[in-house]
Amino acid sequence: MKKIISALIVSAALLTGCASVNKVTEEKHSGFLSDYSIMKPIEEDPGRLGYLNPEVNWHQYNSIMVDKVLIITPDGEQQTDAKILVAIADKYEEVLKQKLSTKFNVVENAGAGTIRFQAAITSVFTSYDDMKGYQYIPIAAAFTGAKRASGSEQQRVRVMTEVKLHDSVDGQLLGQSIDLKSGDRKQDKNSGILLADVVPILERWAQSATNILVGLRENIKN
Image (cartoon, rainbow, N blue to C red):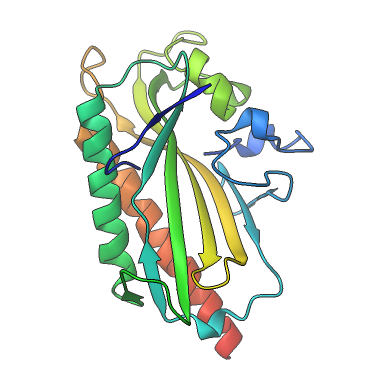
């Protein structure tokens, strides 16, 4: 059973080193996405899996509605203050709307030419730099994230996300992604997770989503 913290809450993956796993199954993830078997590693972005519907005409989409973000964390995960999770969710929604609004109309309601953007944070944890790739399989990471592999004293905050895009009117799946990113090294390894540790990751995700969607729309146009 996954713990679901929802309110105003918050876009996780195998590392490229784990890409030898042929099939991505729901057991390795949160269940936020409906079909994990279609996901493929993104070679130019280690830590990320993605899928794009080849039948989509991306040029038609000029508006985006951003759902409230969810946090879905596995049972047994290293404890994180619920207030921090809510703050992460709020911030992620804020930066998503901010970045996307530079290239799209960000709207509140479904309509023609509108993408429905749904995101979930599926894990937030700290770990040492010397952990092996297999230890970052999303659900397993909840149980290994606090453990060291060998001698490193450096810890980072790691955040996992799952994102799905649908046509806001007919519900057609347009694309989806899973990502795992690390923040800067924590200065105080004894402190809890701080919002400041996570904000750079959220901003990178929001900018990346904007760049990808603009690229898809412009490629179709051209």
